Length: 283
Image (cartoon, rainbow, N blue to C red; front, top):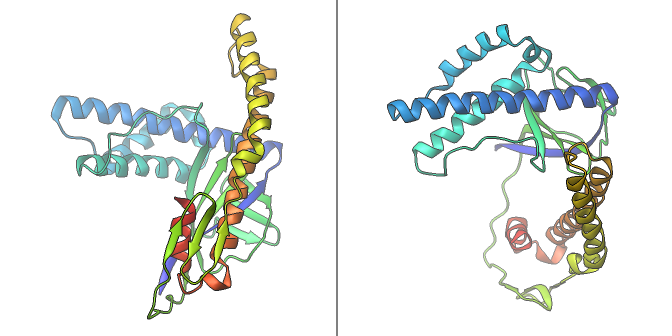
């Protein structure tokens, strides 16, 4: 059966590509906030929102007045607008709260671009992306299927990642007659009814002292920046320390993900199913 499968890779953009990624993220955020304000105004006045089609037409006119919007990937701007329309659609269906304005202080900055005329392709150890050209990336595995879209992300620690969504053919899991019970505890992370045990590595505890030490430094540098009446975005020492703290959190997340993948691939847990163990380890 055909499914959408995601592949995540580390990106290594050069200086010019980093600037273009920052511009694209900023322009996508601007388009989202601009039309969110238009949408909120229409909703207050009429009780109804706008439509994706009407906003898309306004976006074309907006580009004529704001020429800097033409510098970035146009598909990324359309994707940002589409995300806003989907968010408001779910809001009217009472599936979630109303969308909120985006901020550049958010922990993870990203934008989405879609496949059009082979504008997203893999060439050796480089990835071709719209407006960025060929970007070096850590090609840890082969992408199978037709590429649908790509999401470029910048983490708080300053690293870049790309998540490629591909449409590929997969075989469904074989049904089993008997299921394996799972018991989640504190001493052992999980115990299966077949006797297999998953120990609790406690990744946070191993880095707790180091994290506390670096967070204290971050607080002191924030106080110094406030006393000097300097913006935190312009305080170099604060930003350096913020990245150090972010790297510690990132290390814990990577350790958890590594443990998750190894746990789901355990031979003795195959009868439970990868999906079952994934839900347990992510809980």
